[in-house]
Image (cartoon, rainbow over all chains, first blue to last red):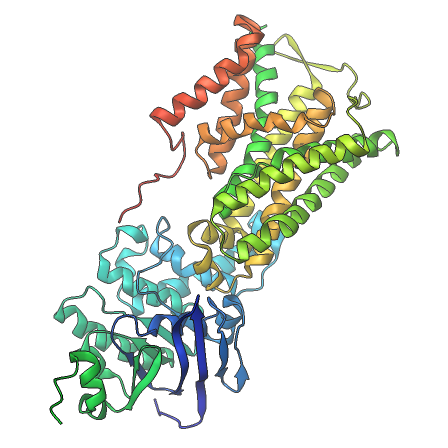
Length: 262
Length: 290
């Protein structure tokens, strides 16, 4: 997929205060269509708050979110999803007591127009729709290697697979921009590597742009470009992995400043 | 005698189930005890009474009017008393306190405007009886039981098959996640209250016909809370089973032991369930895998 340079997504001077704490403070960044953009930064830098503001879970104190030429600032979460932005959570939030298939069918069903009485009575048309939804859900599970677990209760899946299921469910809302909040959290190096491949694959296959928050530096440095670095709610640096790696401010934020070596 | 008692019990149980279903639905989605549910039942009964006595409507229209009236009242109740708390993500205890306030307010509103008189519905079914296996039972009892079963079955199909039902089930798991699936939560919650109110309307009419209509009649929902706990809070089949069990047990106790002891039995049952089986008969295990 080509990385286009047009304005696909941009946040302008995004600010979010919580009782006087500036979680995000005049933060601006862009995401180019087709890219895998990474957001990194120390704990508490405000990365997840940015996701929450973008997806409508929080209203920003000030600033703008622009997506495909539209101002989506402060829209309700369901409106944002329907504009084409989906997300996953740092602490996985699946519909735990439901099967993997049901988890994916839920968003698919919400995108359909269907007759109410038809569904209630189980008419042939409604059954056809149901079968079509099952097939599409199954395809999504297959794309993430979860087809064997289709009927398993979501909470019984191993941790790594729960993360994949959450990605499958997010893809079911047919997004053009997918936000992943620490997709590799709690994974070992091998799992992290296979996740990196999977994310690249998902981008190609579903033609989505990806914005991800991550602490696993090898994952970020391997698949993300550009990388946006946040610290104390503000933009610290931005650039290719190499640029970010060699940026003295970034090194200082992560490792702490040495004693005046200048 | 036994069969008569059983059917009376099932009919009362059916009414308990209708009340418990609405209460349980709201509980499972918003996670708070909607103590105003009883007041909505009471208002539904008054709506039905007005239609029956002032406009001389037949039973079908009275029921329909009361369903619509109570449904609208429940939605308004949510919009006025709960929605702003909900939007500010207030703890569910606040919602519960607001609900208690609504219950007291609505009851006193009826006292102030309509008065404390007890009213009776016109006799829709007269003293008609049907004969089942040689015992005669009242048509109202059989009708109430069958109607409750059909209504709850319909709700069950709605929840399990329709798009909105799927959204409700998702909301029961996680409201934020539900909205991130593209569901408008304000609309969804309005639908939940409309349904709960509609069931309250049915329960109100049946209660009113079977007994009387008066401002504090809504407190009978205490029994619905017991039924919901017995069945498992948040479970619809559970609410049905819990309602029927409670109705039958109560009727047998008052027929064969003593009607004074009826409520003692009901609340003992409640406490026993809370101690030994807090998730009820069909409730979801409250221990989530961490």
